[in-house]
Every structure is written in structure tokens, then in C-alpha cells.
Image (cartoon, rainbow, N blue to C red; front, side):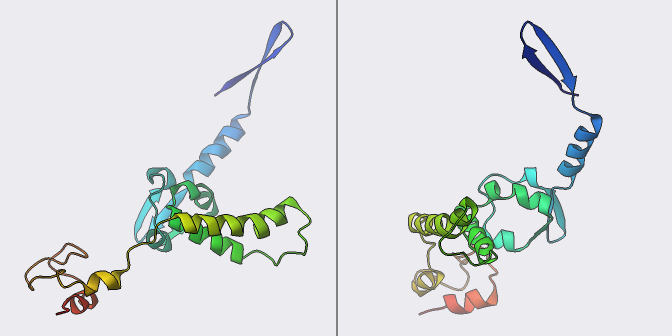
Length: 161
């Protein structure tokens, strides 16, 4: 239980929030789970800026976990999520008459555009596949995935002479 102090004039009033408030906070905290495949993890177990778009596409979560997800997303995943949310918004009135409309329809698209310009592009896999030194012989591990056994679609593409 947390005691809160309010200082008024020369005396201190102490009050406590009701137990039901703390119980509700605990219930909400316990609902913040994400399912990835058959694995269930709490949102707090994810590191900040660690969730890529590929990982996010395999996640299933409720609204409580969704609220805490943005700090966990990489820049690319955050931009993809913002674009998706923006696509689900209603069409703007012209001109925007509220701050909410201005943020959604004017500010956010411009911020996304500027962030995309600053984020370095991921290397194109097709350019990597065209390099002849990817595989020197068939016994070498694949330099794309680092294993002896690649997915067939990669191995077939890598065998460029």
C-alpha cells in the first residue's frame, strides 16, 4: 500500500488509495502478454527497440499489451505500425479543425516521411545473392543464414556462377 502526503499549511494529511485500485492495476499488468507461436511472454520481458516488423507480424496480443508495445519496436516496425494505424483513420476534413485531426492527418504523415529518410535502408538480398563469393563451394555454410542447411529457395539462388 502506498501512502501519499499532501502538505497543507503546517500539517500533513495522509490518504490511501482504495485496495480495489491496486487490485485493478495488478489485473491489468497480468493481462499484458504476447503470444509468439506457442510461446507466451510478458511485454516487460522484451527489450526496448528489439521487435522487428517480422517478429511483430508473428505476434498476437490484446489491447493492454498493444498499449505498451511502441517502445519495444524498432524504428522500421514503429513506422510500419504508424502507417497501418493511419490507414485505419477516417478521411480528414478540409481544413483540419481540431488538434487531433491535425496530428493524425498533417503532422504524423510528415513525421513518418522524415523518419523514413533518416533510417538507413536494409541491404537488398538480391544484390548479396549476385556476389560470386557468397558460396565458394557447396560444403561452405551459407553466408546469408550461417548454417550448413539453408532454405531451398536461398540455396538455389546462391548457386550463381
